[in-house]
Length: 243
Picture 1: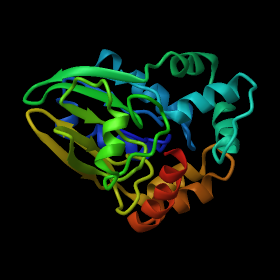
Picture 2: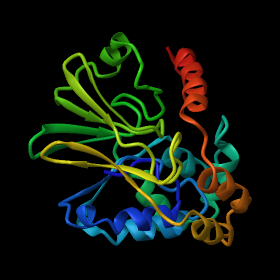
Picture 3: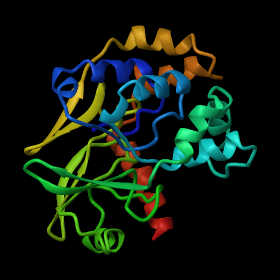
């Protein structure tokens, strides 16, 4: 299960090389896949997984499609969405445009498991490890699955909320609070994983891409990382605005 790859192809390749993932029946992609420095290459690599790949969309997929179609993307992702959209083709855009908001799979040992990017009701809802039970109840209203897997916040956790197990695998391409690529293995239980890779080599590959400011992106997201404290402070403020 991979979330928030953000077109960091070297990190993705490292995770796909993990034996446990190579043997998995399915690879669920939890959105925010291609907004980043190597979007076309990342989408092509994931498409090569064929039917093993199970895709859902995140806010960044929606924003990249809007930018590709010539629309204006409000908010902080506007420039990045336009930059990423300029590096993909029509087939990439059409794949992103038809991705579902949620997918439910029956996972061995876990049972029916709902996968989404941020929440089952919207692709940008900020749900954190310390969000209140009331907030979780509202976001999961009507969900029948006993396990819900979401991304969006780039920080891994595994908690209970109202009798449901909520899992966030962290981020493959832009992790907060730790180096390496975060992901999770599901069935028969949940295992949060972290894959190390050569950050210097990855930064050089990313820096050579056509993405504007690729070198700075690599410095901020590969060679260095925002702390979990910084991320939680920023995301808590956003969550308050959304409430």
